[in-house]
Image 1 (spheres, rainbow, N blue to C red):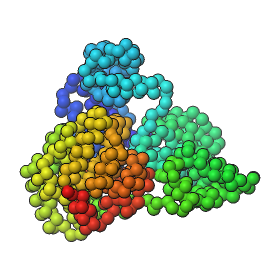
Image 2 (cartoon, rainbow, N blue to C red; image 1 turned 180 degrees about the horizontal axis):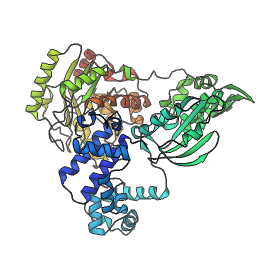
Image 3 (cartoon, rainbow, N blue to C red; image 1 turned 135 degrees about the vertical axis):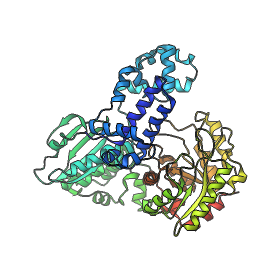
Image 4 (cartoon, rainbow, N blue to C red; image 1 turned 180 degrees about the vertical axis):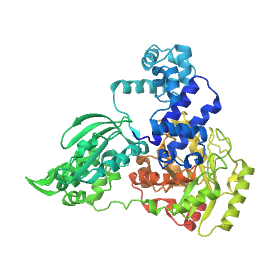
Length: 575
């Protein structure tokens, strides 16, 4: 059995939750939560480091946690977690999987209402007893009722793209290694790079006599096979992700890849277009009568329908077919187009890398500039920078820039937007920075009118450069806060500042709909890693994928420009 980063992170999170329910030592709980965050953000599989000295060198992973990672990686079990599970009833653990149900709220339900399962919670909600508890307002109660209904319906949950990838890519490599297999593609929402994935559509092609289905059934990450034949298998992976594997002949592979990649609406639109031309389109090819006229490649299918080839990320039926008909599709941004990163953290606040380490990592990613944007001193950031520390960091950046050749570090800060729309640092301090990134980190539950007014007021400050992770969402953990995005986009456009596309795997914020809306309004984007460690500069790739889904081109992205032009545009955003 393969152990992935998400498995280890989930285990550490669960340990932290169960310890919290039991009222354990806060420092011990925090260590597990911090370790989960670190492991989840690593671009490399941590299980690969177990038999080397690398593991203990990962910041935030000490000797004790290294031993636990090794234990879990080698045995698939974790003794401390199994002990805690025996101590806390399984029904209580299921409550933790509900939205906004952290250990504090679970403990309140247990102690005050004797709720120890989802069934208990459903009954307490129906009886109106949950509303008697502090912190369980009508919005949360409605969210819990919806979640319980979804759980009872058996609807499979969607996984963040980054988590699905930890299972999809090893599966791809395994199947590519099966004798006779010549091509493996994972289609569906995974290939479209949707921020969440509900299942995996896997297509295989190989030489005659290849029997990949039998090999697939032996794959260690398969929990259950629900269907198996000579050309198709279906089932569930160990993490609960459903899969569907199909063996496709080479002459139909392009048609099948097109058919299983696009959204339902994209497929319907294309098949209707084929019918209007007297053709029939299916996963087997594009046919005129009984003759296949295209299908070996995707390009041939689109071409015979009079269309330019459409990048997978765009196949959502949001105007891409009309644009392809006019041969007017955008040339989408590529990772290689990025020249810098304007949202990077260091050890000065809550990061794990020094200035020098973050610069070295950025150079490995072929960047020529970064903005050091450590957190302002405010809620939850123990080492956040006040005005004095920010000034000292600026001096260190000046000294470093004096030694660097062909690379520049910009002075910046990520500044909290307070509840009333003020910023956590004064204008006089922000005016000395090159980049001012503003963001909401608290009071996510404000009503739409107040949340919108809060952000609009912050955007009025004279030195604001970028509005970071604008919706505040965390995939699978926190919904976007209520916000009138049209007004925010209009304000950003009027101001001439920038909206961030945050590439942190569990944020991917903005979403694709709002990215496209911003671009159509003339707003430029900043694709950011939000890196808190040197290896997290890889988050830029996720940001690029998300931007592509919103139809972003190179010219739409601030940090795809040379430094001199970036400086000019940043200055132009100031009042």
